[in-house]
Amino acid sequence: MPALPTLLVVGAIPPKSSSVRGGQITACGAVMQPPFTRRFMVRVIDTTQRSNPPPPLLARAFFAARRTCTFLRQLLIHRPNGVLLFADVGMSFVEKGCMSVLARVARTPSVLFLRGGELIEAFDRSWMQRRLMKVLLTRADRFLCQGPTWQAFAVNKLGYPTDRAPIIPNWTATEDLLRIGRARRPEIEPAIPRVVFIGWLEREKGIEELLAAVKTLRAEGLSFTVSLIGDGKGRPWIESFVQDHALRDCVHLAGWQTPEQIRAHLAAHDIFALPSWAEGMPNSLIEAMSAGLACICTRVGVVSDFLVDGEHALLIAHQQPQDLVAAMQTLIRNPDLRRKLGRSGFTRAEDVFSADRGVEQFAALVEAVVCRPSVSQ
Image (cartoon, rainbow, N blue to C red; front, side, top):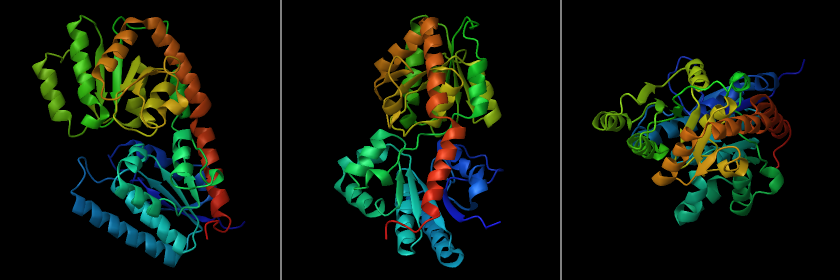
């Protein structure tokens, strides 16, 4: 039996014992499962952020430089058949971009997958960012795109041919989540609607707008609860806000939860809210849709590429508190709309974001690049 090709994967893949959470970890973890482990011998360089808030810039630069040296050593000594690079905003895209340049110099095929929607905005906003991206992000054999918006960016701004910038939708609609959606009985609803947020407790996730909306809606006499699943540097502010505005009976801080606990929370809630300022295609949104929740999300990243406002979810502008108040008020008061959005969101997640189908497509694309000579030489 021929040996499997070696794939060097650089991304957020911490050890199983790690308590670190995040969307990148969920996405990157797919390469440690079939079908990747059936197609490749996977070697990993873990780039998981060490803390939240992140370490100082100099510390992050040091860790990135050390990982880049490890990457170069892997290229020169172990000679992998190909490289898969998961990148995000900030230092992450600089680090992975440098690695793609090194892979090209070493004549090793590379696949680059960027997942932070803010990069597209940064390209148009700053000439320095534009120049840096054109140097670092144009050397890969394939530039994978989460949706049409990313593909247009890769083709029109970075100069990739369309066939080298394929669309690979997010793949976090796992079967265990879809089972929750299939089993949901929307006709059996609680008297008090239950809202859930999942993510880092940060200003950029819209957590302040969410708490302000809760305060406004409670003042209007609406009955509902909100569970915040996650942690971050915004937690002290949240605790003070909840205390100062007498919201302890309404707002519950659950902290980070295990995947099993998150599934239980999704099964027990009715509405999902993510008023984030910037995203790619949020894992937590897809997970909530898979579980059959009625979802509220901002029009960020590639969300509008896949979801239609009022059909699959309620889509709102970011940093517009009045829009969030209106959307939450609508869903809290309208159980029929909750049921409609829950059903259509579930169908969309199953049809577009299925983990089984998405990871298989992703693995086949990577294999096609890795198992032939690089086309970028």
